[in-house]
Length: 353
Image 1 (cartoon, rainbow, N blue to C red):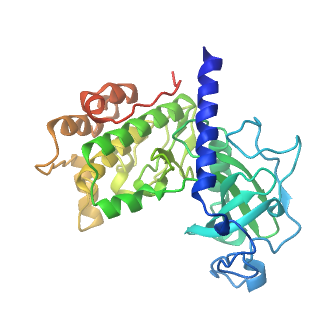
Image 2: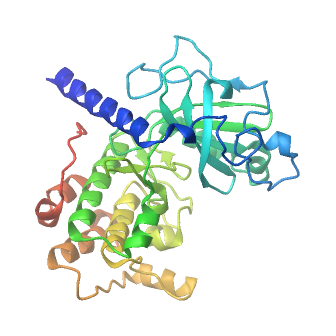
């Protein structure tokens, strides 16, 4: 039975990858086509005093890559056993986005034609911000997670100045941008996203991983319209469960983190509640004109619903946004909640215990 379930998942992932290849015009992946940058390769942002040549992602030929992938399945680029990857193995296409420490580019592995996203990070900027440990943790955690609603990290390699992360490509980009365009989501779409995210977080927690930075900017959307959790930079593998580090984004912080108390995986349940509210209303529930007021509203759980939010949605959000972590609804029970069952267009089919 398990083998049959896995076969169905493999077929679905392979079908989606073929669809992505069809969806992306070849010109956007051809390194000889007219895309911004030197010799058809996009130029990275000049945030440091590097020359234009050094900003070309393929400029350094002395890359020291890591071994790519581990299971050889069709939902990731294929490689000869023991193959070590360099940037020369990829056609680099258009930029997909820009972050604090680098940019993300559309890319295609030359041998298999498998479409991916390559995140290019400058070592100097990571060192200056003292976040090397954060990147190391992100790689260690995300590369071992396997869930339909978690963005795959296939591998990484590096050269003398940059680190390259090879990621699953999500064609529709950040959920944040879709929410901005729509201002708010209808209940069916919001419930579908909440269900997918609840299942992904339940999987993470079963692996003793706490994300700690759930927000629309860290959620991507694939071609089918499914959520993909990304950006595990603030996540932590915490077998001992209790942590005290202040991290994440202000509007999504739970009371225990605002008050600098110990916290565990239930911070993600709070984040799910904030997201559910934002999907339906268009703004986070405790957003205020000043940081102090936001802190105060979070600590008091000063929750106010606009009149258009349904009773079922209010009930779920209120159960997620409980001040005491022990009083928050569990993630499996989120999937069984009447509002989810009545509105989600498709429920997760994962094997998470």
